[in-house]
Length: 435
Ligand code: DLL
Image (cartoon, rainbow, N blue to C red; front, side, top):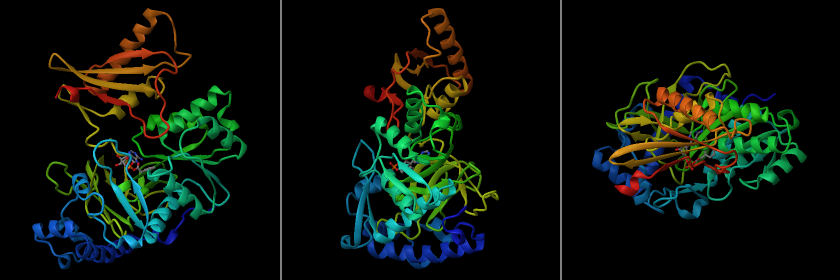
């Protein structure tokens, strides 16, 4: 079986990778400086010239780019090539403010799809597979990226897009899909829908899933793997860097290899901008080393993460990133305590609940409140009030141990919490209404 899509690159020695990065960064900085006035001004302001960047170790001299810069430059301000050379536009799924519009030349589409192909092969995919792409198609990068990757691998591609779960299941069974690509929350919903229709995990032909675009916990991975009878692999990316495939999980299922020949990763202290050493937690920053149309240098993702360089049993040599621990702006500060929604998901799944929940934060009498609606499974549902109250109390205590603050738990009947077909929205913070 094919183990790597591009073995020479994926298993290159550290020296070879650094050599590639050294060559690419010098060219890329020159390209951006010459073609993007906005970034040239940022460099001039910092007193850095392209000739100061002699290799990848000089990257820290460059200024950062932030989401606000992208908004300010909307739509063409960061374009580094003639629009005529671009063949594609994709955009973020954001609902507030101006969307980020990313441009691609054919070269950019090819390198993006190759990254996705690497992810599919790492998940055991080949030209023998039927890849069901149930990420959204359209401006969102999920559908287009995995679709292009599956083509490159030579797999049979089912371009389902997200939603219409009935049809997803029909095609999955009739056309014997072997790899499912969608958000983890949608994968959990598909697993639940299969069960509701009387299917057992062994009834489908799926062997693997490639899930990403939103944070998900190890407990969620386990639930999906059991529900679908597959191995569930993580995939990471963002529109600003091209889309899915910036990093992907291998057979070890412990962290995602970053495609370092195309994307250089740094971890910084989000408050000071200082670059942190390997193994420390901070904000993930990416530099696109060879994209032509929309080559962001030192882009601050706001994703909180750790990088590690240990030896991997899969043979890949590229640096690994851990599962992002939520975005820095996803973190809730409740009564002064930092709470990540992923911590809540971990407790729920460990306590035997479904991944169907909603988190409500509010402020009453100047005090923050945290309420969590938790959906009961059919087996857990009961009309015995004392029994339900006992459950709520036990769950609230488990939450307090994990979070350091106690939420109010509301157990709700089966199938009452809205399911997600794309990125799940599980937090409603009403405090903003009062500010
Ligand atoms: O979500 C690209 C993508 C599509 C990735 C399909 C994976 C699969 P955006 O809509 O621009 O792009 O959102 C990017 O989503 O900064 C992270 O906060 C989050 N994210 C993406 N992948 C993961 C993941 C796509 N595997 C933002 N785990 C990123 C946790 C993820 N968060």
